[in-house]
Structures are given as structure tokens and as C-alpha cells.
Length: 137
Image (cartoon, rainbow, N blue to C red; front, side, top):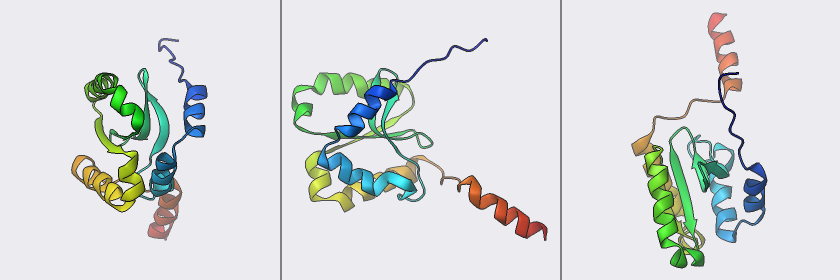
């Protein structure tokens, strides 16, 4: 085999998902199941040595929620954001309070960034076959 397999820390990702803050859980209700204009988001996904709170791979967008720990970890967050930018990701940051007090505004901001930085998502494969069959008839 010529390629080298790099395992992902799925155990740690699962642990982080299970320990989600109320703000993370609330934002997930708005982003899960392609609810935001068809864009697929994942939670607590590894990006290099870091974990993205929410990741849209196709748009190369990372959404981070900052709680009280952000106040004491600003240098870490700056290194992390710089790494993600080097990998081609755009990072949006919101506070937990932003999400809890203004979920609609946070979602609008994410949607605006998606519209500015990425093409529209492709529809799920399950919908394409039916259209192709109808067009051939």
C-alpha cells in the first residue's frame, strides 16, 4: 500500500459531542440534517491536531463556540485558528451567549458566510436517480 492511513480520534470526538454545552446543542439543531440551505455540517470533527466544534467540509468552514474557557485560552485559540487557516478553512467564532440569546442572528451570519465562500451544495444522490429516470422516459 502506498498511502499512509491516518486514524482519526473518534473516541475523543464522541466524548466531546456527549459533553456539548447547551449552546452547542442548540446550534446543532439549526445545522444538523442539512437544515442550513442544504450544507452538511458535522460536530466535533478532527482537523489536524484540533477539533472543530462544527465543520462544513465542502465549504471549508469551521464554526467555533466560545464559553468561559476562551478567556483563558486565547493564545491556544489563535494558534488553532492559524493552523485551520493554513489548511484552507475559514473560522467563524461566536460566544455561547450569542447562540443562546440570538440563534437566528448566528444562523444568518453562518448562512451569509456560506453564500460568500462556497458554491451551493449538491443534492443528495438519492434524488438524482429519479430525475434521470424521468428525463429518459
